[in-house]
Image (cartoon, rainbow, N blue to C red):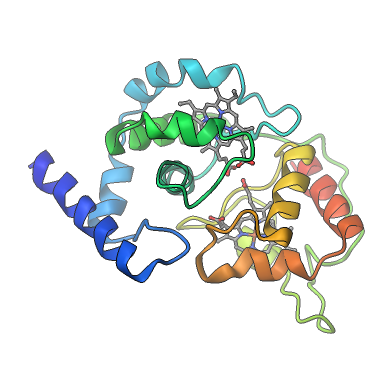
Length: 209
Ligand code: HEC
Ligand code: HEC
């Protein structure tokens, strides 16, 4: 049964590779079910080498309470090179992980209490809550949720994330260096923001509870 499931995933990945989309993970019911059944206890054991970095300080993203499907897809994208970590650490880390390892790690991090900001955030740009018609910029909250909590299937949680990481990754979408977002959505959105707005939005989401 397990072999069949993994073969199905392999076929999904291979089929995606022909069309060269921005991510090779296709959310078929089989893949969704596979990620949902990740073994958090096994993920905990596997997370030991990750803990030193993933404390949410500086440009190290916090993974606690993040959507498992989002985490799984990012790990797959690092492994197949669709997402490039500038320091290449994550590409090396992910290349050693199997599909099962990724599902288990995603389950473990997804079960942790979500990252929390200090509170008192105001959206200085107005874009997070309202968007901006003139630039045809959608409200960030329309996808990431009113409280920055993230939404199914793989729109990540932003609330409480490290401000330095949020800023760095938005700048990477803006320059096109991070290019694994499906339909270029985040590249188009970040491309219309000034660097100052990116800093303000990073600060806003980092402080959201
Ligand atoms: C030496 C430090 C280091 C180690 C060890 C490390 N990471 Fe990372 N990780 C990073 C950095 C830095 C980034 C952001 C890279 C980028 O900009 O793409 C990252 C990004 C990620 C992301 C994407 C998060 C997001 O919000 O998009 C995931 C998922 C992840 N790491 C999981 C893991 C797992 C699982 C392990 C252990 C198997 C691990 N990492 C080990 C430093 C590390
Ligand atoms: C149309 C839906 C949509 C809108 C609107 C949107 N996002 Fe996103 N965002 C996504 C999706 C989907 C992803 C995951 C993309 C990927 O895999 O790279 C994402 C990823 C991100 C990430 C990466 C998080 C991480 O952990 O690495 C950040 C930061 C982000 N968005 C910020 C914003 C901000 C700020 C706005 C408003 C200016 C915004 N988003 C508007 C859908 C959206």
